[in-house]
Image (cartoon, rainbow, N blue to C red; front, side, top):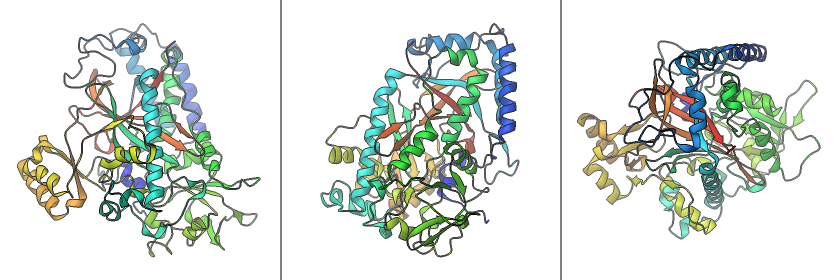
Length: 525
């Protein structure tokens, strides 16, 4: 199968091409970790946080400016510190061994030095108090509901554009807008089955939205794998911390997908559609298919006849009811979109239009997570829900607006300028640290294609204590929670914390020097 870059590749370069896990190897690694962890002394020498210093401009997730641990995480800090540096080093080695043996590795396309490496993982968890998470969770679900209504409106009556709340030009010029699916109502009326909404914590400690991911948000498999490792590597710390579980995600995902069936067959067939093992997120595709108890299929395994999708099996064709797809819109059906696509299933859009198959996520969702649409989400919440947004977001200038573009061009060094179609840390210019040559070229690009850029002030990200190999230092983090929608909406407790391992960096993507942490939502004991 040809290696074709899909939206999964673009959005999750940092999660590129881990190998499919070998269950026997993983189980052996877990048993080895458990045995080693039980032998390690919790009184290992050298305080873990003894010389830790937070960044003066950022909100530190564990420590106050005075150096004392925050009250809501003080118990976890105390238990981690009791490990000492030597005890922590041993646990870090165990975590890496478990990831290697379990196949939790990844590949960065274009990396000339190596093609496979252990997924960068820091065993110092990010701890969030349940009381702080409660409002965030409500805000995520509110935002997801509004975005789902926006998609139904954009591909339906278009009221929000008629009333001038979201400019029609901004919608119809989006590369994610698909006029081919206008008038299609997905089964169950759900467009956003899985949302990955990226959050940052501003200097006041408030969670705010950085970006919406509504097509094929990846990374949740690492949340579950990281947690399994942490339970063994930090067995006593985890066991005493009252951490909310994440293991139910695959079951919740399956239930959400089945919720959308208009008529539930006796034995509904759900499949995970992958471009194949050369795709950067194949580890996640196979992981979720296994955990949900579904078939993992490639496009040639499916065919459409009389607007009904079938799976080829040794016992003959079997009807398919739900497709959790990890292939881009433009490649999904050569009849409807790109005629040269080798990854599509011919006739799939016809079956979708007839209401005979659930596609998750829905076709055309890219218009709602276009960065040029992001500034209008608070207005969507007010328009569709008659509510005030529970979560803030970053002030954003749209370069397609004449006045706002003039502000950016006048002083580009004051902004972080982003390409509306790029992700993974690419297509972004950090104005405050960019050279004059880079800024001049950026201004030329903005003048040539103003619709392609937005600009935001540089927001200081929160920091977490992070092991650097020699000591614990402050590193910037963000968070990708996962929100599932079926008959109701459910948010995974926590999500994927990404950490900028490079000192001073704001870029958390693994493809550019970032890694991950386990996110603990901790209830009071």
